[in-house]
Amino acid sequence: SSTLASAAIVEHTFHVKNLTIGRLCRQQTITAVNGSLPGPTIRVHEGDTLIVHVFNKSPYNLTIHWHGIFQLLSAWADGPSMITQCPITPGNSYTYKFRIVNQEGTLWWHAHFSMLRATVHGALIIRPRSGHKYPFPKPDKEVPIILGEWWNADIIDVANQAQATGGGPNTSDAYTINGRPGDLYPCSQNQTYTLEVEKGKTYLLRIINAALNNQLFFKIANHNFTVVAVDACYTEPYVTDVVVIAPGQTTDVLLKADQPVGSYYMAARAYASAPQIPFDNTTTRGIVVYDGATTANPLMPVLPAFNDNPTAHRFYSNLTGLKDGPQWVPVPLQVDEPMFVTVGLGLDRCPANATCQGLNGQRNSASMNNHSFQAPTSLSLLQAFFFNVGGIFTPDFPDNPPLIFDFTNTALSNDSSLLFAPKRTSVKTLKFNSTVEMILQNTALVVLENHPMHVHGFDFHVLAQGFGNFDAARDRQKFNLVNPQRRNTIAVPVGGWAVIRFRANNPGVWFMHCHLDVHLPWGLATAFVVENGPTPSTRLPPPPADLPQC
Ligand code: C2O
Image 1 (cartoon, helix red, strand yellow):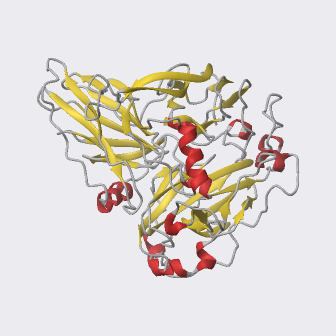
Image 2 (cartoon, helix red, strand yellow; image 1 turned 90 degrees about the horizontal axis):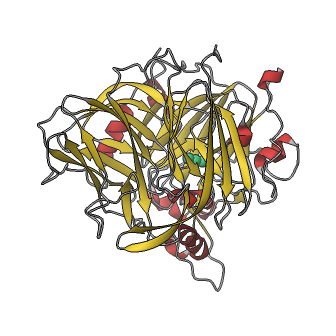
Image 3 (cartoon, protein in one colour; image 1 turned 90 degrees about the vertical axis):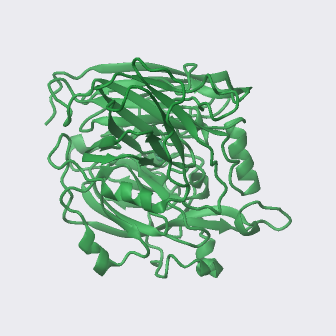
């Protein structure tokens, strides 16, 4: 269906290396791409081929993931460490090459090794190919808004320390807007992001949550937003005064400069659904300044409280897809692979003679359907699949005895068989083109928390979401099979459930995991191994010659 007539090749080079920058009254050395935080914005048109040469001049292992890109027949370029490739070791390089088809909007790229994505990330913007239009009035200007999280420490040290103690990583020291903390933080007056607007004009804000461990509320004083896309999928226009955005998600909104000439703060702070878990409760802000106004005394928006679950749920569940709009895909009505999968935190036993800083004095852990995912160490899953190497993974996800209990009852934390999920490399094998339905059910084994679940390689429809235990007889009635939102990261409501569907039309290995970064090493993950299709154009080609080896 796609013509190559207008397609271009877009080429970038990423030099990943140390950068010392001043933040919060001190100098900190971070890992960054081409000397900037956030890293470079990549702009392509749908149909283009993107080539990125990545040179790892940092002291750490590294991979880059192109979050939300389908990677059609290019799974070798997807990037998650030990899933589709071994890491690029210090001093080495890898070239990511892939074509971007059938998707438009805002995505992003980020490191997919340890917690490096804190400082190794940037926007990836896909515009319609020439001759094609946005399904909304053309904005006067487009502005990436990257929300981030900052630590006054080396981020790998933070990750390693959490690993060593079994506890959570230290909370961050600031949130940021386009790399800047904003004037509520010490020494940050001059690091306040400023957006200049002209009265009457319309701005397309491409909002990305690149924070590691926190969902965020985002507002601009006195202004409404019209949401037009999420995760590079167009939505029915939705007017709101607050955006809720989970790590991994993107939200495109139209902002009309329709208020009296003046200045207005934009601000973001955490939506934290598990208040028992320590989190960074500070606020980042930037300023929207109208042409002709000064920045004196901007109006401050009132952000929802950190635990405002109803506001988060209202925002997420009110979104619908733009049926029959550009790149729209109808919902698969027949399901080949129905799955019921629990998502939640658990524990690992603290070794005798050790002191552990996880919950209940144990080591923190997490699981999907009682499998706590462990990444392989000798070969990536994709290499094991492609070269048919046994012993790397077991295709037994999720068919442990189905977990049937009251998922919202915290008293179950006494059931040690559920609490201590085994560490496994369990994956789900899918036939090419099969349709998958996953009922994702939150559990309360340790704490209840909203988990943003991300699937690599596919967008899925979100058929319904709600609180409490999923009840098939009641909740199947609520499925939106007509115009549901489509996305790559779904925030499964705290103590609730969400149902997603997608077609596995791309051979390769596709990671699925919680995008709260801290939950990844704890095992809140699995992978889909999608078999080759019947024709040459549905088979995964061999890896590029420079694919890093372990
Ligand atoms: Cu944006 Cu596997 O992640």
